[in-house]
Length: 269
Image 1 (cartoon, rainbow, N blue to C red):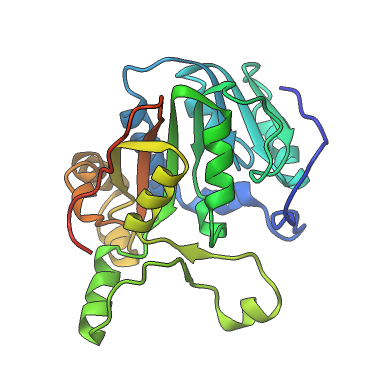
Image 2 (cartoon, one colour):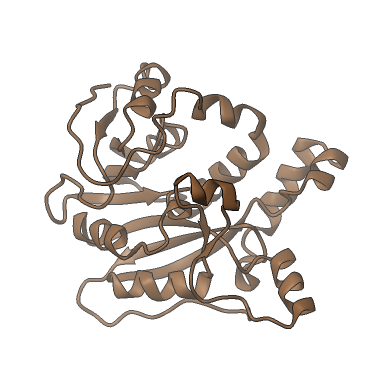
């Protein structure tokens, strides 16, 4: 695995020496495996020449993409993350890592067959520029997997219903006030209908959606063993996508080839 040191773009929020993203995932096996299930379901039966894992961190999901692509390039703006990646990906020669921002990716136009962006939208109140870059580097007909934290998940819809309030169309900043005051990284949830419009505006046609991490609740995790949780997760990701049930939504989108696309959304929020 080769790593370059060039970077552009936004502040690197994950270079905090007191925060280790690899260790953070140590207690979140269910969430990680739920995302692996989703990616494998969306990519099942497909093969790609080149894939780009945007904001891939230390390579947690890059190793999954390597099962579907000849080469995978992980990009991340954080030198700390790329340092972790050097060790984590040492046995994966098909995966390289480069330091760059999602706002200006150093790839030629139409040079990637697959682009993934998972747990990145959480930090993008307005993802228009990043989605435009995803579209730019994708070849016509290429695929993107975009994940967004869901502001319209089932529990939140009940809360808003009880307050007599609609789910906001705009991204919702969920940082504590103290984090806002100290200038911590943006941390937002997105309305899936808005994300669908943003994808279409970037020339990305939604082909399918999955509701992910559907059982991510402390009570459920205390009661059910992980194998049972994952069996249920595998069974419900597709059926619950139409109502945007879970805290995380995965979108499989395809770069338009000049024909007018369609907007895939069902259910009510």
